[in-house]
Image (cartoon, rainbow, N blue to C red):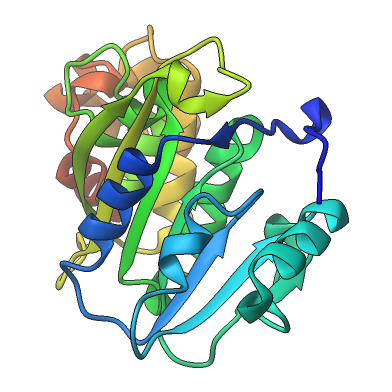
Length: 251
């Protein structure tokens, strides 16, 4: 059974089984009962995930043609694939679950924000991203790529950059390198006034990242607070903990 590649869905399918095995190997270093694969495509990862013992497996895929292909090629996927846009999906399990996937690059940041909404249910994520995005999520303060994704993810997850993936590992090869990262939920997330305040502060600060914090976030604080020396810095110079602490001083 053949399938077509759809540019509109950002489809670049993994064909290198060595990479698939490395991702699954990283996954199996952790214990979990439920597993969701996002965007299984033609099943490069799915094939190995189905071999895991005692795991309740589900996948979510928007492209009906790929679902038909998967169910034909791997009959055990029958009734395990949710035909939906992940960004609009409801929780796939009642209990906690791990997430794995070669995430579609055109919506990978949105996928991360969606997973953050589910963080109480998702202790582990192993995902493949465009390398630049993977580096951004894993980066630390004072780095050019440190930004909104870095801070929001690292407030709740420990992030580890696992390995690079060459463009030649895919069909068709993307124009960029890829990277695989692992996210493990923090036992104690960073203390903040509210998540809403934290998200607003981080996004506002980085939307004008070249400005000093005092100018970038002036609408969120009273004038006397803005005199503190931390506001002399730019957003990329603040740690996750700095941002969290500042939420308690917001209007």
